[in-house]
Length: 412
Ligand SMILES: *Cc1c(COP(=O)(O)O)cnc(C)c1O
Image 1 (cartoon, rainbow, N blue to C red):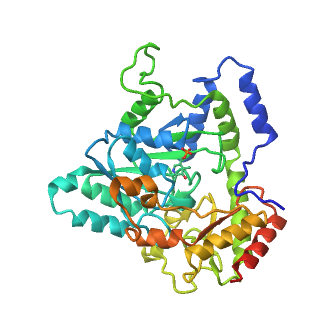
Image 2 (image 1 turned 90 degrees about the vertical axis):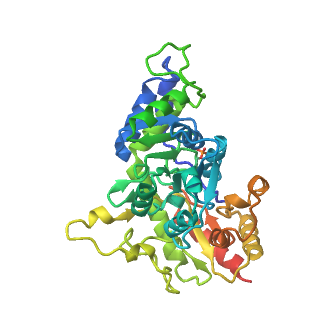
C-alpha cells in the first residue's frame, strides 16, 4: 500500500466547471473571478475578498497595503510555513519572533506582551507596526487577546488563516478576525484552485490597494496602460476560480469529511502512550480526543470564565482540520523521530516533520544570527512532530494501515 500525505478531492462537478470556462473567451479577470471573490467574502463574513495567485502573494500585498517597509518590525511566530515570515522580508521589514504556546502551537499571547513590555525606548516600540498571527494547522489563535494587545499598542493585525478556511473563533470565521486575513488554495489545503490565494478584509483601503497591486498597479475602471502605483501580476485566472467556486460550494461536506478522518485517527491512536494526538481546544469539541491532558496539559482556553447565559455559541472555537500532526512523547529525540519517519515512508506511508522552525532555516540564521535555543518551545515541538496522511477521502483501511505501521515504527 502507498498512502500519500495529502490528496486533492476533485469531483466531476469541478472538472466540468473548469471545462466550461475554457469554452468562453474570459480566461482571466472574467465573471468566475468575481463569483469566487463574492463567494469567499460571503462565506467568511467579510466585505471584501481579493483572489490572487497564491497565499504568499496575498500576504505580500497585505504587508504592502499596510505600508509596512524598511525599518519596520512585525511580531510573528517561528512555528509556521515560511511564507508567513518571508512576506515581511519582501518589504525589507523585520520579523520579530515570539515563541508559541505548547498546546495550541499558536503564538503565545503572553509572550507578545512580555516582548512589548521589554521595549523600554519609545523608538523601539514605534518600529513595531503589526502582529501577524497564524491559525496553525487550522486551530484559531487567541484572537480576543490579540485584538486587545493590538488596540493597546496601536498595531495592525494580520491573520494568516491559510490553513484554517472554515475554522471559527467565538462566532466569527477564521480570516475575519484581524484587519486583513489570508487564505491559500494549494492542493493540500481544505479547498484548492491548483495554485491560489485570497485576501479578506472589511477595510476598504486595504481592499482597494490589494486589488490594484495584484493587477500591475491599475486602479479599477482606469485605462489598461495607466499604472497608478507599483504593482505585480498576482492575478488568479478564471480557470482556477471556477475550480475554487465548485470546491467552495461543497465546503461543509469537505470539512465534515476531514472532521471524520481526524476523529478516526484520534480513536485509533487513543491507546498509544507514545504519541499525543493533536490538541483540540475544550470548547471546540464537546468530546475531546481521549489522549488529551494525560499529564495535566493545561488548557489555556479553560482559563476563560464560562460565558453569561445565552452567549455560549458565540464563545465556541472550531478547528478546520488542515493536517493531522501527532507529537511523540517528550523522551523521544529528534533522531529517533526521523528514524520513525523513515520507517513509515519505507512502508509506503508518506509523512513529514511539520514544521521546521522558520528562525532555524539557513538564510534566517545567516541574516539574523538565530541559533538553536532561541525559541525553545517551537523547537522542542518541531523535533517531535509527525504529520500523518490526511485528506478528505482517506479510507478506514488506510488509517488502520497507517496506525499499524506507526505502532511498528515506534518499537525502539
Ligand atoms: C499554505 C500556507 C500559506 C500560503 O502558501 P502558498 O503556497 O503561497 O499558497 C501561507 N501561510 C501558511 C501558514 C500556509 O500554510
